[in-house]
Length: 316
Image 1: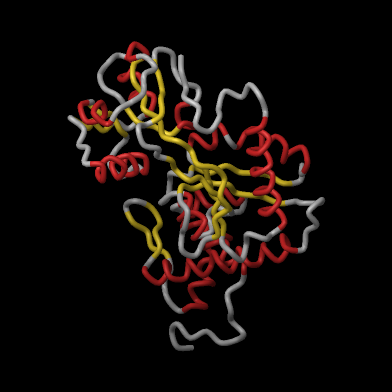
Image 2: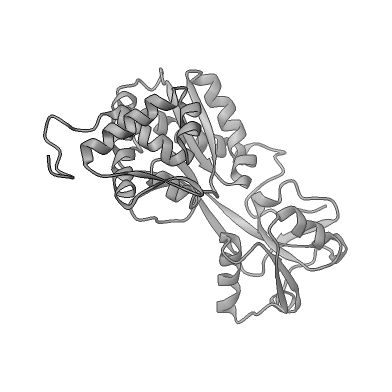
């Protein structure tokens, strides 16, 4: 048989494709075998048979572990799609009232902390046969990339349009000006922003990019911008008078003592949404979880005493 030209009787099996995905994601055969609960020899055999079918190596060992070859990277993308499609056959057949399986949800820290817990609790109560796994929505290229490559079923993202993905809007999370409490509650001015030493996350962070994009068209160049990795460190420095910051409301809850958070002189928000592949968005488990998230937000917005309302400043 010529390399790369499999016959109709030698197509890859789902087990072989799952083995390739597991090794590629884990970075090694022993790690993947432990994760799947199988022997390393059976995993190696499955990958070897897949390589025989396609007629070329798909994995190679390196100082950093086992990595995919260029051919393996091309195969891996289709392997994820094939394995996902096979699982979706079962998911599509489920009744909305009898859901089962695993739902992988990618989320960044603030949404995982403040939006998801009540949804997860209600969803577990209503659908105990579904296991929801939370993924770090800031790893592996972010939640958008995780949905595209099949690592996540849905992701909480910031955006209004993402080509190839279906977005369900959740809410507009308002950015607030944060300063020491001694500053007082008086309105923030553009002049104050211009004169302030600004503390922000690193430049590639979406918050940093959005804040700088907000300031630039207004002709505002902060006196200084210091980049700091951790939100908690930024807020600690602000509390001690070392600068000010601009953060989304959800990232500030609960606001630490000694700080005041106020609306910007011109509104800035980040649109939060649920992202899913269009052909998967209507799967019962994905549709039901998304609806539960929307329902939770609707109820929270009408419930008194929440401590978080659109357009409301946070004060201590």
